[in-house]
Amino acid sequence: MNESDAKEGVAFPLHWTAHRAIENPARSAIVIAIIILFAFFAAIFMDSLMWGIICVLVLFLGLIRYFAPTQYAADSTGISEKFLGTGRTASWRMFRRAVVVQNDVLLSPYAKKTFLDRFRAWQVHAPNEEVAQLIAKIVKEKAGTSNS
Image 1: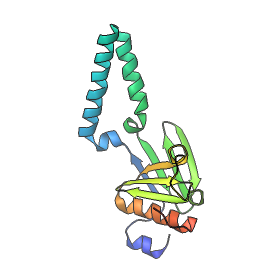
Image 2: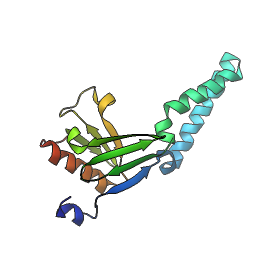
Image 3: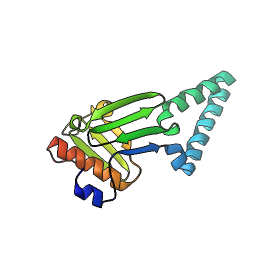
Image 4: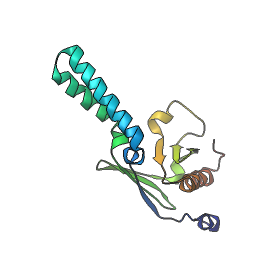
């Protein structure tokens, strides 16, 4: 961390929890209503309550990143993520590109956009835009390239 980071009011180490379902209650209500609606139609059309339950399970598990909290920690050496008891850690040098959209940061190991970003990149939900910009700035400095 350098002096300009301290002036922005953001200092390492950072620890935060992102829980999108709690942060967006209106969107969460819509998502839950859609899941219930699809489960209802699955149960009716398949003529079995079991298919409705399977539909709820499949849709909920497909959206588990939205419904369950994710814990993040960042310091001057790298970033770590804990989700449902599993974790991963990476050095800032692993990333070549950071794309910021509001509070979300896509950390990619590739310098240019590629379809492999879906599988290798990290999607980080920062607590605010200042932290997101700081993460992008650090990736840019460590990678030595310009970021998109």
